[in-house]
Image (cartoon, rainbow, N blue to C red):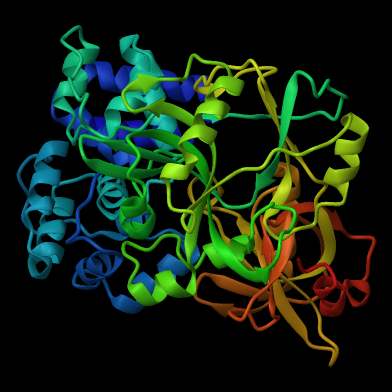
Length: 529
């Protein structure tokens, strides 16, 4: 456990991607099995300890520490794991030596929920503050050390000199602590998983700089505002994977049941809208906004009522495998022809084909893009007609040409401390706009888009202008205006303001603008798509 704690501590304070890969690689090469496998599972989010929940941690610490003291300390520190690690008292009887990572995972994985708090406490008694912090982060699945699942896999690939795309393809056919994966990395046989519905690394697009391209070389499609998914059917089983490689099959069972075509397809998962007629998306029934899709995301299961209220479908735009034939080395034009050929085999209520944009030249395409404010469209995709399907971003093959973001001037209302490296600063900001009756209503929350210097400036404002506290959240005087950029805005019955922003981020701090001159809700509602 000591080595894993040291790794997390180093990752938290390391900003360079290259340096993080070096730390991960050294750990994975040097640590024994199965400790390194459980560490990799924790870093990639595949370690599940269902008996340990945040409430379990609170029960354990409140049995040892005055509950009021703990809650006040938690509010001040801003992170439960860090608070417990620091406030945990030394046991009256010196415990046995510190437990290993595999011992911790084994005990907590087998723990009945009723005994989890006591077992967790027994482990914490045997640890230093750094090890307690690591265990709590691991047990609750909230590492937040600046390492994504893909970066952790890249660390493995770099450590053992194997291809990252191969690691990602094998990943869902293996289980923690990944003994077969490490054996392959150290020169053993590659795991044979041919009949399993495995994930393939996505091809990604580069941001487009707006320079004209020849449409004879590039095909243009709308960039849909859903979530990118991969559909895989092999060995009689179907799986749905998100762009990050997460298995989301259980969340969209109707899509999995409808995809009976042997092979691998790439597309955009969306929800049908109520608007009839052919719109910009070229479908008989328009796609709804991302706000509607969010009602289905993150759920472990979807009952019939939810499926009927938010009917999901996939807009397909690429075919990677047709049966057992790998098409990824074929040019985009050949894969597109193959996709068009197999489309009649799929039910039209669950799948349709991403239409190509008919534009006589680049200038005409630019005009179409600028006028596209459909709820389901983010911009335009440009795909080189002779491009193979390759993992990751490759220069000149695919471009994403997003429409310009919308902006609004909003007033800061509440602030909350961030996590990980930002846990010492107020970095998550709720902001609002003025209603017709003069009330300030929240319209969104943002934590990105600002530099470190701006973060410190906003943190100082929060500390100097707090007027109330609600646990870790501070209400502030309604005097500071932020310019908020967002991709789109949609009507929402879940929010008191009646609107919900898509991808809000802080564009700049408007110290030059009085709060009374910030935008109104009516102005925002005029932008609703």
